[in-house]
Image (cartoon, rainbow, N blue to C red; front, side):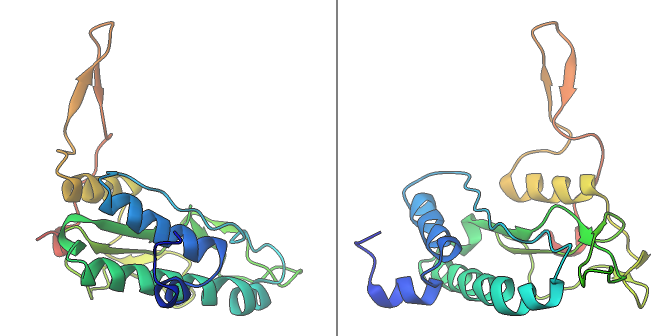
Length: 180
């Protein structure tokens, strides 16, 4: 990391997440095929708005945008899929502790690179983001899209040592609007 210019390290942010995103880029550049970067703190059951404004969103915005730009400048965007997502959505209703609880009915994710068409919003929810109203997608659809971008057929099966076929994905179709 010390080999990176100080200006680039600053662009990512001098946070654990920012520097981890920079390290992820370096790992991919060195040939590592799959990297996960985590950012704790999103389980905002209390003080959701303060934590999002002061702690979470500034760090995410800085590091994620720097990663996308850095990968683009280095000519790695078509061969690198960058996914930004959490484990599920948050309740549309604020709880008694100014937080938002778990809400699996809706979720947002962003994809960049990897041959995925960008600048599109797929799907919609009702005005409170409680439920999908247009183009609902499943976890399997997301998985099929990622596999497609990685060049893995979503229908791929492996055979276990007991000669049982095991699918890599139980259903789902790649999101056609974003597949090149």
